[in-house]
Image (cartoon, rainbow, N blue to C red; front, side, top):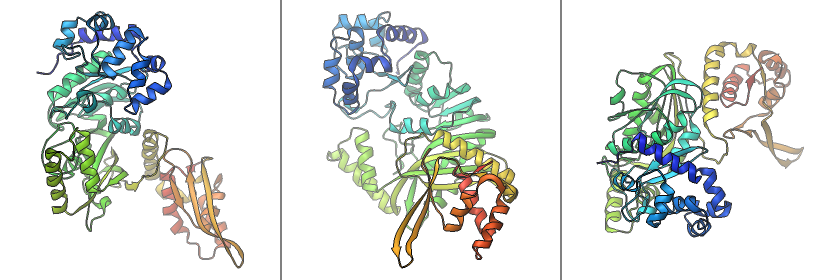
Length: 484
């Protein structure tokens, strides 16, 4: 049976954490920047030493972040109003006074309850393991648009981290999961953070059948491979990328008109098939779709990564058996790689839906969420003004630069590459020719596009104004041209 993390128990635990200063800022202050960074790298000893004189906070750090066993008196003092027997009965701590659950500060003022990872557990995780805040969940949180909405669905909530972020901009939140244990820990996360979230158990969209939401976020079990379930947090039981296809295909039906869905997804790269054709085939009509590919992994690396993620040594008999079955499945299905990325969907009801697939594999610092919101705005603007582009005055934002690469020639330095580079957001780049570069230089908000193109025709006799419009449209989509 999963633990019963009641509102009363979590209120007491919250009081203990606040009294001890067990918050994100409190932990950094107690450990110092260097020891805290070392802990994040999996090097715990500096944090263990730094926490010795931190009192109750030090006990909580060693208990929940380092996995140490602590004296009964110290645990009792650190947990304060939490009854020790109740803490043991509900897995918060073990009978030998170690952490039974991963309970840690997150962001500025939250805590997340999840299961212990492989490092603190000391072995492979069980099938019903509830993952904590990992790279994927942080990536989705950073890629999610944060505009005020009335209703939001967190599909497959896990430990509840996406719903925590949703609480900053959604008035009502519904969170679902197939796993009873995940719902129990998510309920504890919400109680601990004093959030009112509706919880429902069931598979995929079953628990919310017949309902619609202004926004849906989803970190589905998107691992690609044979149709099996080793771990519920990552395996769907569907073969290949069918889990991602299911969510992309069904999600729009649960959105209000104009509602937005955002998710992580994986897709197969198969011999003789364009990945963009594959993912766009999942979309129903009347839906804007933006598929952003962040990485493509070769099958061998992909299998090894996910085995280690679950605490399975690829060299062990279990690891060798799973590797062989996984790679055989990839080979039988012509899989050359596995793509991973973000998907943004909007229900429009329009016949002219915008669907874009693009690679974004370079490093960038800014979160993708604001860019996703801007992309949706640009799509809507182009839908309304697509036949008026020539009469529109444009400006180039100051964050867009033109880079040129030149080589020496008989007549001096000749440009071989002209590249627009956006220095903010995801750092989009576009190669352009000389006429388009000149066109953008004239986009200062004074003249409409048709006048600028007419002027350029005097200098470039072979310039086709109609051919420039798709380029202008693409630059608007990528935030490199703005309506004045």
